[in-house]
Amino acid sequence: MEIIKKASAGTMESSDAYVEIEPAQNLQIQLESVVQAQFGQQIRQAIEDVLQENGVEKANVRLVDRGALECVIRARVETAILRGREEA
Image (tube, rainbow, N blue to C red; front, side, top):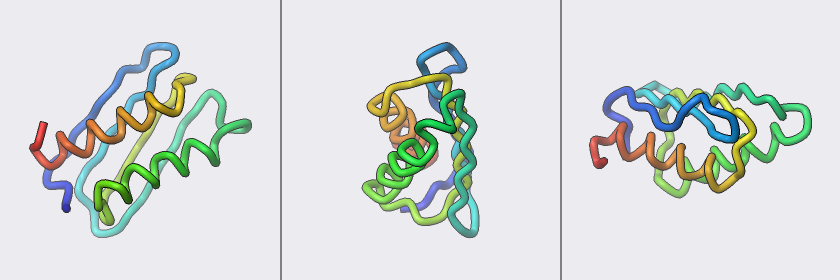
């Protein structure tokens, strides 16, 4: 499934994450996190897992993490995907 429009989910509040997704020719993930040094690899893997589970192979994804739990990150990415497909 393709991302057909730019979409976002989440907030910049503490313990949350903000995700933007938009159509692209390939897959690019940009991650900014207050805990990047400790958990950057796990956050990136969670993003990649949600993208794969939803069949997204081409998109620009930008995630700004403010200390969110993994379940919140996964939910924000999935919501952005659904909005980008105009399913939500």
